[in-house]
Image 1 (tube, rainbow, N blue to C red):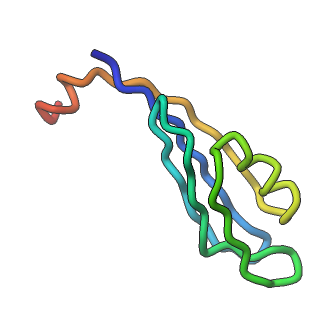
Image 2 (image 1 turned 180 degrees about the vertical axis):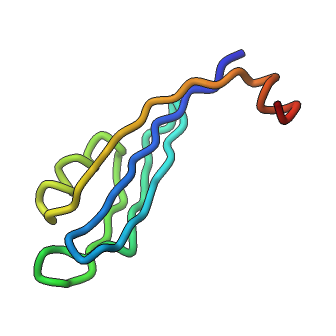
Length: 78
């Protein structure tokens, strides 16, 4: 069995960094601890596909990594 996940890496213009991991077939994501360009705290809780728009609107850099793992390898710690 394979485990597929999407990792959203975010960095705001003030140097704050955070990440959100969303598993396959799970759409909800929550982002906190980020500041917009004006230095105001911003918060996101919605479907993961909206993270890109949230980052664009709040001047936050975004990188998305799609990763697939083998379940048994993860389970056995290899």
